[in-house]
Length: 108
Image 1 (cartoon, one colour):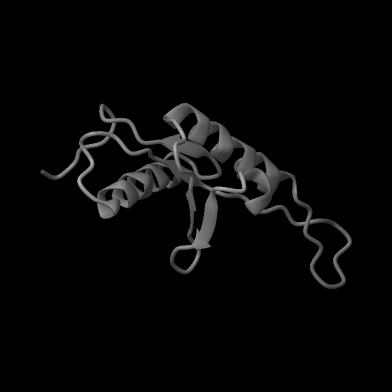
Image 2: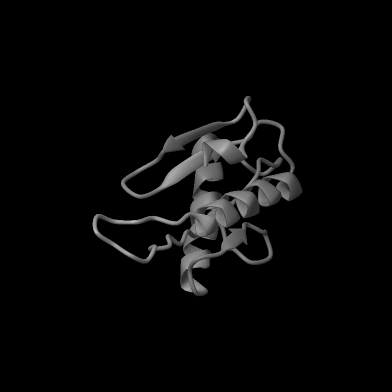
């Protein structure tokens, strides 16, 4: 993941099997492109467990959200990214899903 982000960006573990990438000043379009690059890089990795003769491939689901004028705090931004992540899982896994107001309901 860290190979696909800029030096000013930050990638951290955020829970057991979840990671968070913080991309300062990234638009929704550029953040989506970064997520696609991460998705492609992980999908292309070949992992060989001990004594394996064929590789095992890892899949990843990603949720993307960016800051806008309706966000009141960091928790709301993370909640949007999390909603997009769970949408990706709901719609077949191993994909990138972008948070869009028309697709997700928010609690007021």
